Amino acid sequence: MRPGEDVQGKSKESGENGDFFAAFCALGKRSAGNHAGRMFDPDRYDGRMPYRRCGDSGLLLPAISLGCWHNFGGVDDFEEGRRILHRAFDRGITHFDLANNYGPPPGSAEENVGRILVSDFVCHRDELVISSKAGHDMWQGPYGNNGSRKHLLASLDQSLKRLRLGYVDIFYSHCPDPHTRLEETLSALATAVQSGRAIHAGLSKYPLKRLKKAVKILADMGVRCLIYQPPYSILQRSVESEGILAWLMEEGLGCIGFSPLAQGMLTPKYLDGIPAGSRAARPEGFLKPEQVIAQQEKIRALGRLATTYDMPLHHLALRWALRSPALTSVIIGARTVTQLDDTLDALDAPALPIELLEDIDLIAPASTVR
Image 1: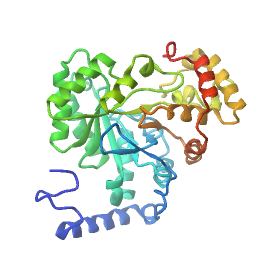
Image 2 (image 1 turned 180 degrees about the vertical axis):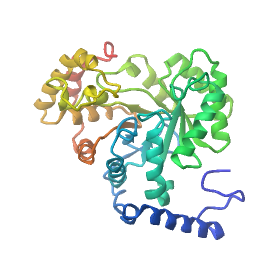
Image 3 (image 1 turned 90 degrees about the vertical axis):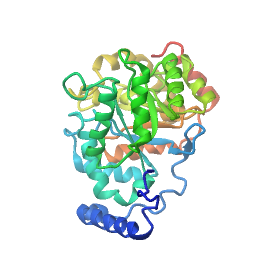
Image 4 (image 1 turned 45 degrees about the horizontal axis):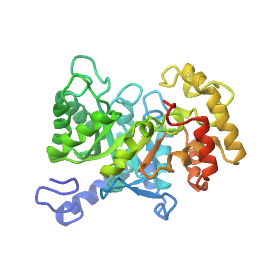
C-alpha cells in the first residue's frame, strides 16, 4: 500500500475516504486553535525557494531544509519551535529533517514536531518531506543503538508514534555499524520501505568504500538508495577530498549536507570568541569550546573575506555549500524566527565569483579540512 492510498488503492481525496480526510483536517484545525486557523502563505511556491532534484530521482527538495537536531527538544521553547516551522513552510521549506535521538532529551524533538504536525500541518502532509534516522544511542540496553534489524525497525516504529505519522518520506541508517553485517542493516531499510513505513531509504556518514557496498546491497534487495547525508561546510570538506560527491553524481544519488554553518562557527557570533548563550557555551550542546578555538584562525580569515565581498559570513558559507551541483539541499537550524529569516536571506545573495571561491580554497582547502 502506498502512502496516500487505502487498501483499495483509492486516493484519500476520493469517495467516502475523502469525506473522512476532510473531517480529519477539520478536527486538526479545531485542535490547533488559533495556530491552524491561520492560513499559510498562499504564495509560498512563487519561486522564493528554489527546489532541486534529488539525484536522478523524481523527488525535489528545497535548496535549504530545516533540521531539528537542536531547538525543538524538551529543553527548548515549544511555541517558538511552532513559529519556526510555520515560518519555514511559509518561505518554501518543505523538508523537515529529524532523527530518533534529537532533543534533548532523546526523542523529544520528534515528540514536539509531531504535536505541531498533527495540529497545524495535518492538511499539508502531502506537501512535506519528513525524514528520520536511527543508529546512534537512543535507549539503554543492547538494542538501543547501532545497525541491527532489531534496533532500526523498533526505532522507526517509535519515531512514527512520536511524530504521529503513518510513514516517513526518508528513513536513514544514521551511521555505519562496524559490528553488524551491512546486509542486516540494509535489510531493515528495505523492510521499512517495502512495508510502507518509509517511502525512501537513505544513508548518513558512511565512508566511500562502505557507502558503495551499501548502495549495491540495497539495490539487490529491490530498494534504491535515494540520498546520502554527510556533514558539509567550508570547515568540513571530507566528502570532496574523499571523492564521495563525485561518486554520488556519477550514480545519480542525492546529497543533503548537514551543518553547512559548522554548528554556527561560520556565523559572525564566533568571530571574537565564544559568546554567552551560544551553542558552544550551552552544556547540552554538541559544539564544544575547544572546537571553536581550533578553527578560530580560519573563522576570522573567512569573516574578513566576507566583509570584503560585503556579505555576512553565514550567507557566504551557505552560498558556498550550494555552489556544488552534487548538493540537493543543505540543512540549517534556527533558534528563533528572526534567525531563520536571516539565514534564508542567503538565497537572495548572488552566486559567488570564482575569485572568491579561490580565496576560500586558500583559507580552507578540501585536502586539509576535516
